[in-house]
Image (cartoon, rainbow, N blue to C red; front, side, top):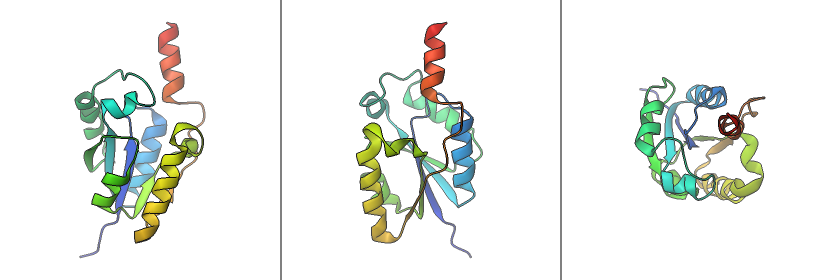
Length: 140
């Protein structure tokens, strides 16, 4: 039996849009996808209040065919989940190269080197983001 690669994708999943689907689709092409779903408290620490609570966001993600498994990610720091899973690949959009998640990215890269894991950062899906959607919702 051939070993199926392990893939980790952390996300808030509050407003699912085509960019999220693109990342999950690409991630699933590399192996079995585990989503580290950020808890409400973790999201609150950097993005503010969510529209949906954790269990609602989990139900939405469970319905996406590219997602194999969902586990809670209780902080922005991936370390605990990554050490447990030891994924072959971690997927994240390039948006975390700057801003509040920049130090998290650096920590992920340093950790996954210890087991030869690879970070894959697909291009951001043009014209769509959760922040833009939230702004439009607030304007109406």
